[in-house]
Length: 132
Image 1 (cartoon, rainbow, N blue to C red):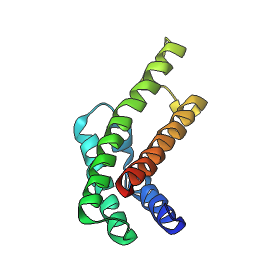
Image 2: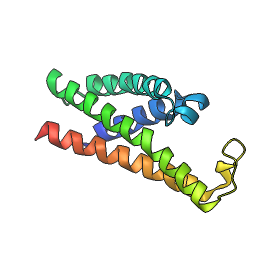
Image 3: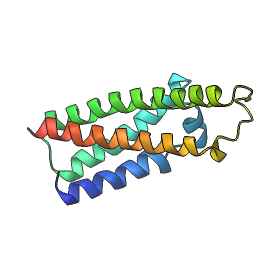
Image 4: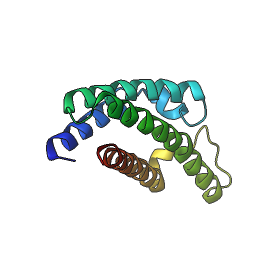
């Protein structure tokens, strides 16, 4: 992937995966499918813009890139936070999920990093597959 396309993809990912994601969607996308779907629709619009403005793909390649990444993104987002919550309960058996200060837990931020790393590998891997 060339430098300009990578920078464009990073900017679009940050905007559509973070900036346009409400706190409510972020908190509920791993437990309520409608929130995950809302998140994926917003992200899908960003990926559509990326494929349009990067000029890297034919129409078929663009659709494959978008849909494959949305499916993988959904699987990651649905499961990564379930994994974090499972680990938090194991580490703190008496925690109340409604009042647990996850933002004080370093492992929470490790899971955010893992989540973003998995998304990056998906973007790069799917780009490689599409362009091979």
